[in-house]
Length: 257
Image 1 (spheres, one colour):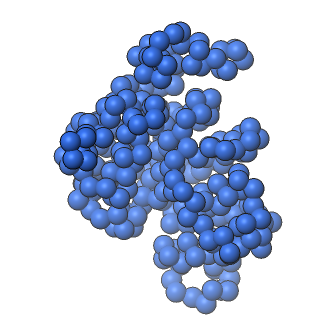
Image 2 (tube, one colour):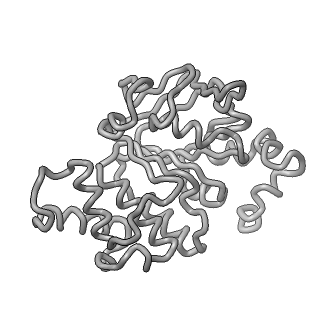
């Protein structure tokens, strides 16, 4: 079942520093929602409040109709929240298929069976095909390109059949243009039942993929709206550049128009 994510008045303090300040955020069922903002805006902290890696100082987090504000991180995962990590969480000494197999077993997608059981093989093959890694089963993680590692992280995240998928942090960082385009296609082809919230600094990728965009600045929501509304916002322009014209921020898209 497709779910929404709703944050109301969400805040997180670190001593005297308020990293996330009274944030209201709504991620609609099945949407591809981007979270953007300058460095230090509070994006990663907000994501950690959603996953449960950090507890909220105040406010609420709801997954669909369920209040998960005080629910531990592991239980949130069982409720359908999955994430790719800011730092690679893969096992470099293992193969592509072995990494995905471990994720399938960890999430309990299939009841305990011998590791070579056909059901495991089929599930691993399905995930590798979905993320563009079919035929790479026996390749060691150390032999993958940067883009392929990102694809493998996505396959691992999908092993738990998530209802809400969080892509942390900058899924396209370090990718070539071809790899970024492949990542966009993979996310676009995810089932409609999967709601996606992602952080990304590549604004071309954001506007190619996102159905909604939320801009954070100094821990607060500066703007939530469609990509076109964000493009047109002078406040967003100033938050990123301090001054100047909107064309300077979105120059590549303008140049192609």
